[in-house]
Amino acid sequence: MEKRRIGKSDLEVYPFSLGGNVFGWTADEKTSFNILDAYTDAGFNFIDTANVYSVWAPGNKGGESETIIGNWLKKSGKRKDLIIATKVGAAFSPDNRGLKKDYILKQVEDSLQRLQTDYIDLYFTHYDDLSTPIEETLEAYTQLIKEGKVRYIGASNISDDRLVESILKSRKNGYAEYVCLQPEYNLYDRMRYEVEHEPVVERYELGVVCYYSLASGFLTGKYKFDETVRGSRSEAVNKYMNEKGKLIIEALDQVAAQLDATPAQVALAWLIARPSVTAPIASVSQASQLDILKAVDLKLSDGAIEKLSIASKYVKPFNLC
Image (cartoon, rainbow, N blue to C red; front, side, top):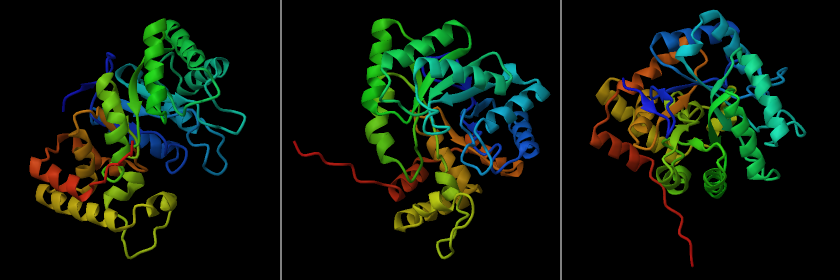
């Protein structure tokens, strides 16, 4: 298992990022500690969270995931061995969101306090804020890096035009520059990343840590097409329960059987094999589900990659001039 560098930063991670979105939602603090212990004991070092996780859960107000991770960092003493990514910009409420400078400077202090750390390795724009000038947002990030509170910045849920504009403004004005993109990308949802994002990623040498790597759990193969999907992810999973989804699961099952692996391991290995991808993000609700970590050592043949790619094929959009 070899580390990969995130874009043009000096951050080196193993090709799997543990998603913290479930901490304080489907995993309580004790369970979350067990997951974090198992993940790091296996030698992995990249944890992804956000300031708003998990505001959507009943009774939560946001910050629960960072708080749990911070409590675990204090207990474990492993902070110096890890790459911690968190985010700013998503909405706690309609009037508590955005990328204005003062807001970012306040939110980073809250995140640092919850995480019980002096610095954030990778700080993401979680959602773009079209009402705030790009320069204002970049000025905030630049200040935080100069102060040592943030090491590098990344972007998620941002258009390619705005991403490129941000990078060019950074280079022109000496602002901090995005080194990483966090897009939605998995075997089912391929087109936007491969058609729109990947050319930008390659042109500007960005790292890529993709979310929904297992399509909200659909690519684990645990959902049956002849049964009603139930549970916390039912709404997200139902969009995959169609003919395309069935073809993908069939291909995953076939490849998994040949390799004595699980569909989830194969789906992640397919992402890891993509040259532009640094590390897929996936979350688990219990430590026993971390068998997906075996994906990093799973070598897919060209034939297996082709089988999966054909099953998940898409039609590129055709624009008339």
